[in-house]
Image 1 (cartoon, helix red, strand yellow):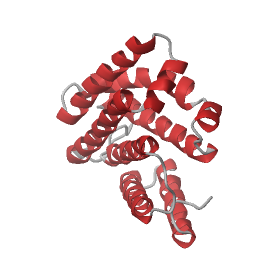
Image 2: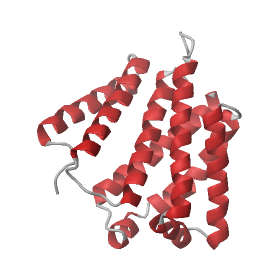
Image 3: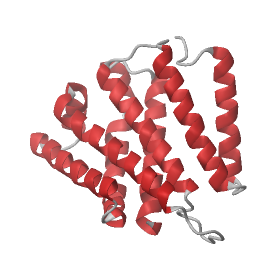
Image 4: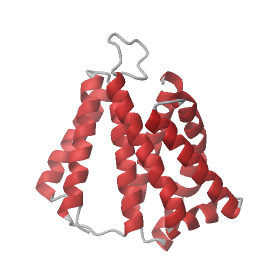
Length: 212
């Protein structure tokens, strides 16, 4: 299967991702490299989208690109200085607000998928108790949380609720790799990527929940 990005450029993309991740992990110029990681991810995703090397179903595109938007938002939140134990510089509220907006866009996409994507609806029905009532409850919660992140009001509370909602969804739905691979024909590497992005979104929610 061909990669989403042509091979010569793929190596540069991987190198930039590893470089940014390494410096962020060691706390060296974390804000700058978080901003660089957001830029790198945005460029690579755009290149993959316009390149058209791999064709996905619309429902899978929404899952993939909405999470990428959320991860970019997470990097922007990190670049703002949120979550730093010993903050030497004041945080950038503009970067944090932009990151929160990206999280809100992601939640709107998730809520939309629960109403219009057969694949996402069945995933919730097959893995969570409560049936249709549970789907509607998640739809309302995602919508309300999206409004909080987009408006900038009650962000800490919204992040705390999101941090509670995400773990069961990650474990029961995203974590069932065999289900997505066998019934929805999602490639193993792609589902693992989606699961990893869910973990990243959870991390962003924890940062905002504790230092929003």
